[in-house]
Length: 204
View 1: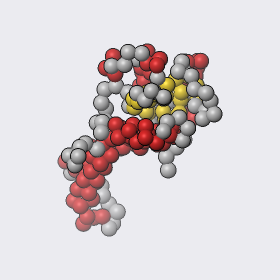
View 2: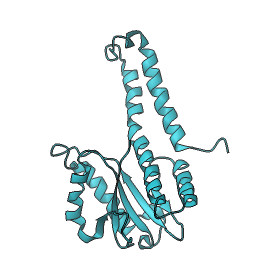
View 3: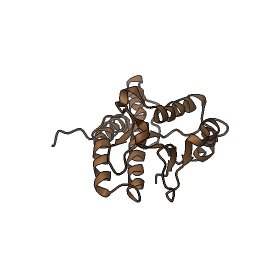
View 4: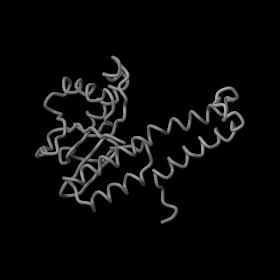
């Protein structure tokens, strides 16, 4: 259906339009590399809106890359296609889990966090980052009211991170907090629905 919402297309369109309007508005000074001198407040606001979408764009790409990783071992291509279609047709910041799959052979839930550690020289999550990550892990452990899932323990559960400088160091703090409730995903593991698996997804 041509009018169906596509998150990737919508995010890309919004970002491209905002950047194009800013570059076009300052093409006279572009050759000198000076984009700053003639920026109006209105243009700065457009730039702020465009850049605020970057986290949603990265989150979407990590979502799709995570599903691709699962498809290499745990889910079929048909299930992966369905999950990807669900992701692409869902607006960013919708209530519930970032990914929810009810496939009877491999039901799973996933939360996606693309935080870049900002404390201790980029080796530790900042306080606000850590608070949001803890909240998501607790939501995977205990469930979320707005997710409309009766028993989260019936699902395999994943906390997914963008693999970037310092992230592997930063997640070490989570093991101190949650102990045996979490584990780093090893694709050779026999997965346990009692655990929350931490997954690091590299993006090129």
